[in-house]
Length: 144
Image 1 (cartoon, rainbow, N blue to C red):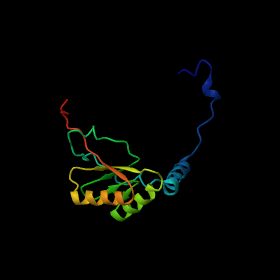
Image 2: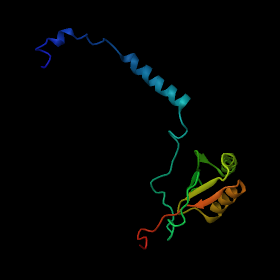
Image 3: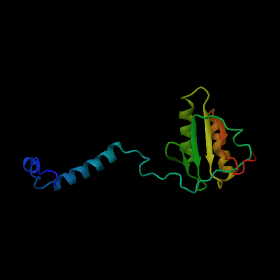
Image 4: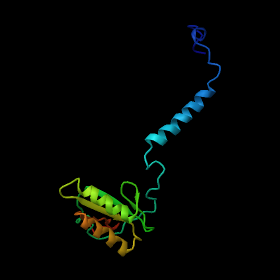
């Protein structure tokens, strides 16, 4: 053992007898911090790995920077600053539009989102004064 030449083992403190209560204190503190300071994103549903944006030739040419992003799933779930329904989205858009002179919004709609739902979202965004960009990906071949 490496401690033998300097007799370090004799100078070490003994192990404490019992620290089992500390386990429960740590567990309680973790639960307390999740309850008080926890984000609604910690255990909230998010975009799954099957989220696929539509492909469109020339999608990169039409790309533009935006200030806000929302994601829409075919199940009707809308993710902005968490999971929102359509009424909550309208309110969120109004609040976010007041934060900028020229608000812009990127709508990342998955492939199976109905056009009617997408049109409702775009019209709500226009009503809140947003410039709307619909997200799409360039096809794999790209044509280049």
